[in-house]
Every structure is written in structure tokens, then in C-alpha cells.
Image (cartoon, rainbow, N blue to C red; front, side, top):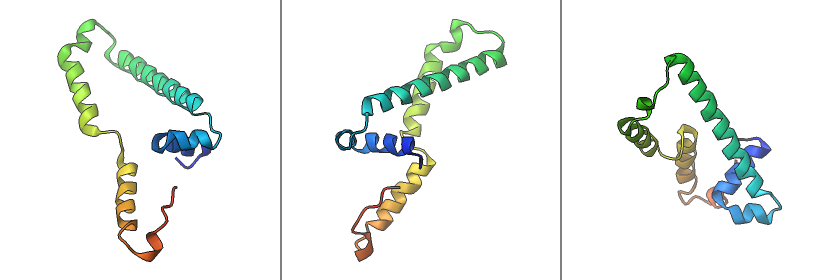
Amino acid sequence: MFSPWGRLLLAVREDELAARGLGKNTRFAKVQAFAISGALAAVAGALYAAYVRFIDPSAASLDESILMLSIVIVGGLGNFRDGDRSCRDRRDHSGSDESTSRRIP
């Protein structure tokens, strides 16, 4: 997430209005992120179909849908790197003088 596009996505996630105020096209960034995630989901579906060699509607039963939804909910919106960053933020904001300004990666 240290590329310009990654920093733009972080800025949109944190404060979309501020990112728009800096002249960034937040709508286009959201569309790009949605298109990339859709393409990755399509690739995952194609790989699954190639692995199983047979697709039928029972593969998307209610039980399987609830399982996938619960995996997403339990997993949360962050990942391991975000969890590490939030721990660093708590440590940085402990009240010492050098932690008064928040650094954005």
C-alpha cells in the first residue's frame, strides 16, 4: 500500500472528502477497486470450476452462503498488516512528546 494508488485508496477509506479536496478522483478509484476485486473473484471462480470440474447450483446452497458470510464477518474488514498498524498507532499515541503528530504511511 505504499504506491500512489494504494495511498489514494487509504485516503478514500479514511476521509473521502479530504481526498476529494486534494483533487483526487475518488469515484474513479472506487470503480477501479471494484473492477479489480470483481476480476479477482472471477479468476477465483474459474479456478474453482477447473478444480471441481463440475458446477451445479447446489454448490451455492444456503448453508454454503451462510458459511462464506460468516467467514467474512469473523475475518473483519482489516488484514494482518492493518492490525499491526493499529497496534503501532496505539503505541504512538501513548502521550509522549514525539507522538503528537500522526504519521500516515
